[in-house]
Image (cartoon, rainbow, N blue to C red; front, side, top):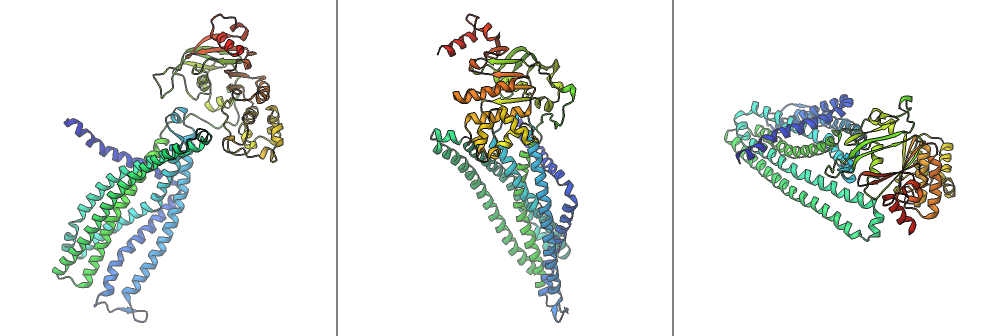
Length: 592
C-alpha cells in the first residue's frame, strides 16, 4: 500500500513540467512576430514600473513637507503624478495594440497548422474521435489561448513586476514593517498555488463537456433528416440538455471554490491592511510615509490576489494547449502536393493482393480479412460480391491505403504499393460511393473537386459524360446552382451523377464503385449505370455490388464471405457451381 500512495506523488511534478514544456512550444508560432512582441513587452515593463511610482508620488502629494511648486503654484508631486499617468496610458495603449496584433497573427497560424495537420492524419485517428470534439479543439481551445496571449500573459508579468518591485521598495524604506506585512503573504501564495491546481481540474472537465455538447449539435444537424423522420427531436434536446447541464454543474462547483478563494483573499488583504496601519502607527511612522507604505501593501496584496486568478487562467490555457498539441503530435500520413506524376509512378492498372490479413486498429480482436489473394489485370472490370460484413469495403480502404494490411502486400503493376508516394497513388484512383458526399457550394465547385483548376469546357464535358448536363441546364443558375448542405437540394440520382462527373474529371487509372446504384429508383439507376459504363471504359474498375444484375458482364467476380475469398470466376462460371454462395445469392435475387 505504501508504494501505491507514493507513486502518484512522485509522478505529479514530472507531469507539471511536461505540461509547462508543452505550453512553451506555442511560442514558436510567435517567433515570426517576435520584434512586435518584444516591443510590447518593453511597453508593458515601462507601464508596470510607472505604476510602482504612484504610491510614492501620492505620499509626497499629502506630505506637509512637500512645499516645492512649479507651473504657477501647482504641487511638483501632482505634476509628476499626472505626467506618469499620461505616460502609462500611452504605453498601455501601444502595448495592447501590439499584443493583439501578434496574438491574432499567431492564432491564425496556429489554426492553419492544427487544421493542416488534422486533415493529414490517417483514418485510424478519426475512428477514435468525433467530429464535434475535433471542431471544438480548433474553435474553443484556440479561443481560450487568445485571452491568454492578449490579457492573461500581460497581467501575469505586470503582477510579478508589482509584487517584486513593491517588496524591494518597502524593504528599502521600512524593513521592520515590511517583515511584519510579508508574514501573511507566503500563506496567500501557497493557497493560490493550491487552489489554482485544484480549479484546473474543473476547467478541464468543463471544456470536455462543452466539446461533448458540440458533438451532439454537429451530429444532430448533420443527421437532421433522421432526427425528424424518427421524431427524436425531444430525445436530442434531452441529450444536449444533459451535456450542457453537466458542464454547468461542474462550472458552478468550480465557481464556488473560486468564490471561496476570492473571499478569503479579500479578508486577508483587509485584515493585513488594518494590521499594517496599526503596526506603522506603533512604530511612529509619519502619516505620509505610512500612506505610501499602505498603498504599496495594497498594490502588492491586490497583485497577489490577481495572480491567483491569472494563475488559474494560465492553467486553463495549459489544458487547451495540451489538447491542441495532442493533435499536432499525432503522426500524419506521408502526403505531398501532386502537380505531375513522374513516369515511373504512373499506374497501368494492374493490382495484386498477396495473402492480405487485416483488422481495424480500434478492434484488434475482430479479423476483417484473412489471407486474401487475387489479381486484377489492367483495364479489367472486377466485381466484389458477398454478404454484408464480408470485407468488400475493406478492400477499397486498403486499395486507397486508408489503412495498411496487418500482413501481406498489395502490389500495383508489380511494385509494392508502399513504394509509390501516397498522394501520387491516390491521385490515380477515384471512388464513386453509395452515400455521395457533396459540399455545400455550387454544382461547379463539386464537380471541379475532382480536378481543381479545370476549365468550364472540361467541367461541361465531364457533366455530359455523367448524364448530368441535362438536369444541370434545367436549373436557373445552371452550374452555379447551390446544392445545399451535403447536396440536400438534389435528388439521389442527381447527386450520384455529380459524383460520377467528379470522377470523370479526375480521369483515374483505377476506378472504384462502391454500391453506386443500390439506393436509386429504376429511372435514375438506368441513367447512372449508363454513365458508369462510359466511365469504366479504358480503365481498371473495382465494382462492389449487392445487385448482381449490375455485375453480370464483369471480367471477373470475386465472392467474399467472412473475410475470405470463397469463389472467383465469371458470372456464367459461378452460377454453375452447385451449392456455391454466388449461385445462392443469384437465385434469391432473380427468382424474386
